Length: 424
Image (cartoon, rainbow, N blue to C red; front, side, top):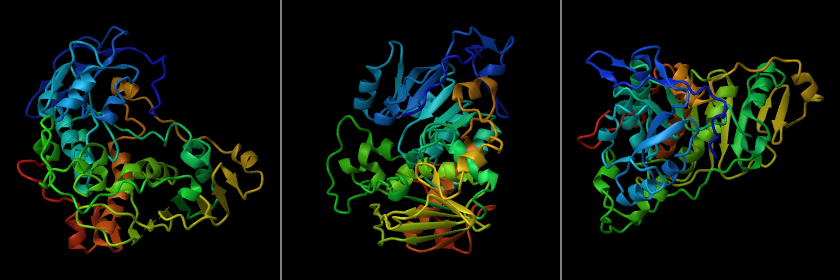
């Protein structure tokens, strides 16, 4: 579950005023008039795009009030509206929602193939952005989001929280303690991270597509063309949409895309690689279908300094340490072969503090712990792996240029053509 905001957050809030939009700049509400704030009892206003299960699950975030929702499925809109206060505004077109001057935060809870376009449009409209994972469906979309968010001075949060909160799956501790261990140098360098069922992680291989779909009539309540949006047109089948869309390349990328940022964003953080990416990826997987996502056995990422991340899909590494260096190993439950690890670790400094409340981030204009920059980099790991799976071969990647090296086929996957009239 998403951790809640602390109850004692300062309730100062942005003064109510329309967003000033010009051809050259966007003036946020928090800088308009007076000292920029109104009564401490006020809450930030939020609009949610996509109110299926994930969107409805985040209505009650402390310090915010949902004032508008959007969905292309009328049934979802009706169900969500019944959970919220009267006076709520409902939309079937998100472009109308992001024009609302009373909205502070736009929460994007759609399938991933919509994340990039919506985030860029929301930033252009002067909104702060809360986006579900994966951050974007392609590497190129992620770069456009970073550019738009920073151009307009927006606050951005990606909705996975393990780098700063909660017990990190099988490790039995928060990631902060793992980062402290890495920064201590007690394990040595370079490090190898193994992510699989024997170290506490589930790649959810039930998120696979079907390659024998027979077209069915589109339900009356669903605007299927709008649901597809920038994705290529494919005849409607219920398995393509809503809960099972993750099994199709056009909209998501199976278990790797669904769980990748939950599992891998903390790795980028504790390895100190928030401003870079691996330089190569190797895949061991069955041939993938052109439409339906399949499973994989093993994916290996290597950084320029020799650090590696190994995704153990078929669970063959039954004796693997989660984190291994030349001087020692760390196993699930924060167990290690380093003698007196806890005592030694206590002598080292704690990792740098982070802003872990998005309400605080919006009010103070300080970057959230997981923002557009480091979120884009950890999403790149996911999308690099998906590109290798689609093509069925190993790839080399240039982290500076964010392009595959001497590989036109792979680079086509960075900025694929979107279905007209959609663009980013």
